[in-house]
Image (cartoon, rainbow, N blue to C red; front, side):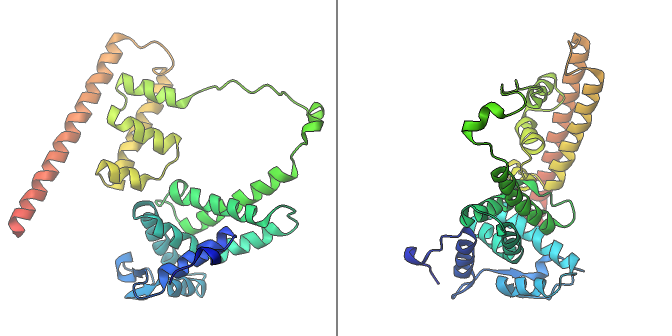
Length: 289
């Protein structure tokens, strides 16, 4: 099924529904294999069409394990497998998004499409980066992000001060000078050897940019668990360095030498583990051949 340009909806939420219909009907509809989502989820077995799966979840609001399993899979696919799965993820949440939109539209004097777009943007931002799949209830977190985005738009619209009244605005009008710059502290930590330079950008993306971990792990060629463990180790070293003043004061040559030696040791250990893993993989392939 296709949607012509003349028939394409103006509402962002309606547009997602139209795209979802196109992706899930016809001779080759998108589906999900329930058996691949793991045991003890309570999901039915076999392959399900996505509209059928959405209806199944709607009919079982207390099927928490099933919902979490489905949404962890949907979020991973949306982050790693292309825009079609982004459309699917939004459409699977559409009943909740429309409920939020209906409540937020009440009393809203602006363009309804603008509010829908903000709700959608909040959902997509959380889908792309904000929701941590190691935590429970990813679906609830996504829907809350959508609600919050729409609510904040209403708050901004309701508290805007007209330009002609600017003289009556209380408080300072001079922008605050940027202060802190945690990214500079992280870069200083890398120069000292508290984290390896190959981990610098991933750490900034994850901890400061709050980006999703799955695409970064895929780009680095390691598992999500391995990257999470690596980032947690950096967190511990940075916290210790901050407590000792290593990131905010002059570091002695002896301390700098020690930190660099620890960095070299971590790099060698990581290289050795990667080499051993590669050899095991090659040996397994040779045995299977």
